[in-house]
Image: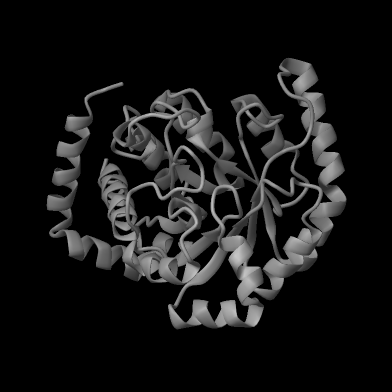
Length: 318
């Protein structure tokens, strides 16, 4: 599994290179929402961080919103049960009240994650996203599993065809639907991801790139990032570690986080940099059981995200 102590030492190095811990956070907070055009013009590539609400379990969204800026992000990703409960909280608070909360904390609603709805039941969610100024919905694919070769390519083509009327709604709402390469799914393998990107009839169909569900080979993952290029709407900074499907000590669960498990994220981050990646980066993991905070307290979750972000920033230096 690799020496986690070695990654910890790299983290301290990353913090030292950044100057100070707080200075690093302040810099990321100030630049997280910078448009890609500015990054290109200045020659400085910047990650645009998206904070997943489910990292905080079922915590009240009012407690989570102040954490967004503290992690250097400008956007929040709302998750529903069982992973989080913040999407349901939006309904409880109401759109106007939730919009006021976002404005109060200078946070934008960046994404609605709706695996529970699947790709063909998103019309009302897309309309909600449009009203809330949110341009992205992440979901899973639909179709047969366990295919390869020509059979897989044909199934991907059929899925894309079935998505066309839904993409028309997405275009009307100004929303991109990003399909995650989820385990035990039609869109799971590198080939399926490449074919989805190749066949996508619209920029409103994209990929949510999850290294966790792919071979833990840094060179392969970096090559796939380069191949998919602008079709990636969300990059999950998330590795497999020891998995997330069984009970295990907290320190083993945390091996999913960047800089803790054995995956070297440097080739992946350099591939994103070389592609001038303009999508979101979500520092991510799943706790077991679902619905729990990834650490004991809200403050500890935020500190864990910041630790991972400092590692990612160090990876960008090459």
